[in-house]
Length: 140
Image (tube, rainbow, N blue to C red):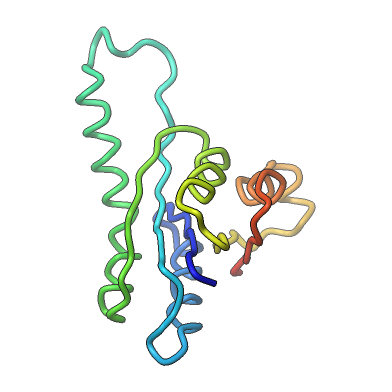
């Protein structure tokens, strides 16, 4: 692996993916890490009440908060990374970002539900698996 995209939503599940990658590094070397946080877009026309700039700033703050713990783990381990922020549908943004960043893999934490439960809720993880041509490593 040369480059890995790790979607981070701030949950313990996504942190497990980061911990997995920290533990998998060989001799301090490993793939370039790209942490991605996706914020859900706002529906409806709220721009008559709040400026687009204020909305983007708010989403950026939310993204920074979601990435905080993952960044702390990687900083503590001395592992370099880049952070990325997108607004939109999570699976679409993950797939598109992995391609644009020329990643070799996507490593995602799962919520540990059963396959049936994931099918019923149409999880982001399943959507990514179906949309990408890249290998996806799932960490439970």
